[in-house]
Image (cartoon, rainbow, N blue to C red):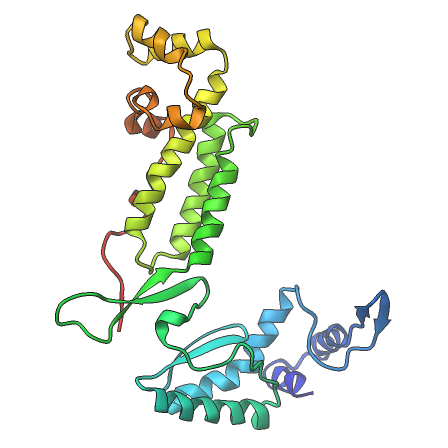
Amino acid sequence: MRLLQLIYNKVKCPTTLRLIRKWLRAPIRINGRLEKRRKGIPQGSPLSPLLSNIMLDVLDKHMELKGLRYVRYADDFSVYTKSKSDAKRIGNELYLFLRDVLKLPINKAKSGIRRPVHFNLLGHGFTPVYKNGVKGQYQLVVSHKSWSRFKRTLKDITKKTKPISLLVRLEKLNKVCWGWINNYRLAQSYAKLKKQDTWLKNRLRYCIWHDWKKLERKRKNLIRLGIEQGQAYAWSRTRMGGWAVAQSPILKTTITISRLKRKGYKPLGDYIDKKQTLIW
């Protein structure tokens, strides 16, 4: 097996090789029955991407020798060229190299030649730079699917019926935002984050309004936040829904951004640099 030979070239420990061989030959369950594994490696284990990197290290060196610009993560990789003809030529060369040298099958459904605007990589996409005198340049952006997944996560944390305090909610938000924005720090996302931040602050206000529950408690809390008694009484008895209240002066003038910051909230735009990242 070529993979074991590549590992043996670097690792001479027979015990390690024996364990890897057993793992690679572990049976697979099909329709409730265990059957022998004829090809491929078991998925879902930390060892799977590690073995992919070992196997495709040969491909990396081949592409570096050819002077190609490429990105590879585990068994997914993309090569970038200046013209369609170059892409076809390089694509055919790599197909033959994978088939004849590494003996690896190619997933034709996922393979192909695409323009940057029609291509996503690890949650990132590409859009042209619209600027006078600039042609053929692209900027890195967050893909639509990644944005949607991020918003669903924020929506789950800021669900008004979730039985957690505001401080715990803000702590969870900060952890998620730090991780997500750090992962996509190279992408141009400042404008969309500012828009998302407005939505997120309203979600937090909605949670606070829901936590106050009773009318009298709402009135007292509005007074504590600086609203006159008569106005606080009228606002606490409003017939608007909670989401409408969160976007109205009732909470925008009382649960201000400065008050949220004092509780531990950090605006999404503060996590990143405002400079635009260009991909040449």
